[in-house]
Image (tube, rainbow, N blue to C red; front, side, top):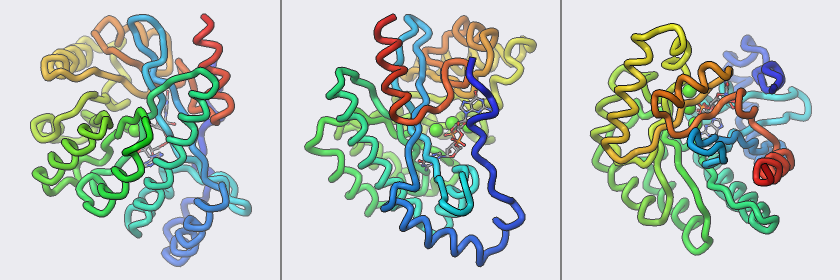
Length: 275
Ligand code: C2E
Ligand code: CA
Ligand code: CA
Ligand code: CA
């Protein structure tokens, strides 16, 4: 099984991170990092419970800083959000994912790629225009996982953006469902294709009948609304089997695979294709 320690990329000292000058320096470096391939996308498979095939893969960004070492997204994404650089990073990730998807297609592997798009960007008109430009005209198969839905202040614009992305063939996933307090209102507000149950909700699912009831009700609700359900952060066979029995369509987590560098993803896909 996968080595649980290997993907922990949060190695950067927290104390230096709270220093605003240091953050500023880091953020000016991020701009260059996107150009010089210091940032890369790793891909984590989502496995279908029905037949074990890979439904899609989630792109997760990794920053290999030449001096500071590996910096995890948990640390630099929030800063990029604050400084507005999340837009450049997300546009870069769209370009990169389309490129990687085409490269895999050339090797006979077709797989949808899910990208993390923050609630703030979902309602950003300039981002929408650019994203649609990048997507239209190349037959990309993309999913936008909408993260930090809590920051969506304009449901009307969010709904319009979702309609525009879906018209362009992009599927929409509501990320980290159940992590916030008012998740139900996002179901009302966002017309999505996939519901992604947050890891915090599935941690005790094997032991707790109460937690199983919560998952089961969520699965039924999502299915009733025409969405597929994916659970994230699944680390054991017991949790995998329990979630499959509760009707989860797709499962993601270290039990299936760690996030993989592109070359390893191609191997993973070719191997699972052959099975
Ligand atoms: P997320 O979207 O909820 O992604 C899932 C996180 O859980 C990832 O952390 C993944 O590596 C980790 N994970 C996967 N399987 C397991 C498991 O079985 N057990 C445990 N304990 N963890 C697991 P990562 O890669 O550090 O990313 C953290 C967050 O940073 C992501 O949370 C996402 O919100 C954000 N992020 C990552 N890449 C990007 C990006 O390119 N753009 C944006 N906007 N956000 C990103
Ligand atoms: Ca995600
Ligand atoms: Ca998530
Ligand atoms: Ca999560």
